[in-house]
Image (tube, rainbow, N blue to C red; front, top):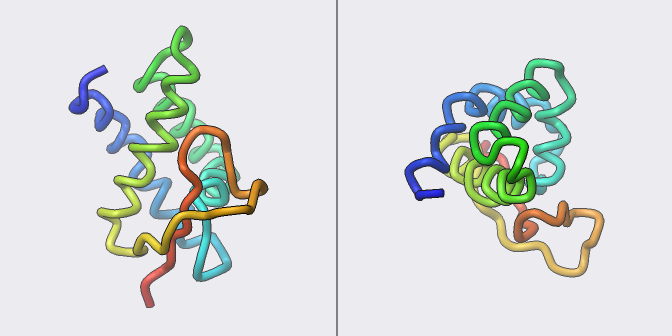
Length: 109
């Protein structure tokens, strides 16, 4: 998959990622927690599933998860204007989703 193809899911996920950021009740959160918030609504879950389909289809579900969790969502967070990268997570296995390097994000005030 080319680098350009990894961004095809951006317009599908972007509004739901923004909504998930707003629903998270803490100022600092992990990608894993953001994805949980994203999937908490039927629309967000549908957008997440569509992003996986776009990024890898049924035959490449592992690859699709790696792309969505490790590239698509972090890129959307960086460009949202709502959060800032707050560092990598070490020694907290509950924050590791198995698809991307665990990282913290902080809401901007």
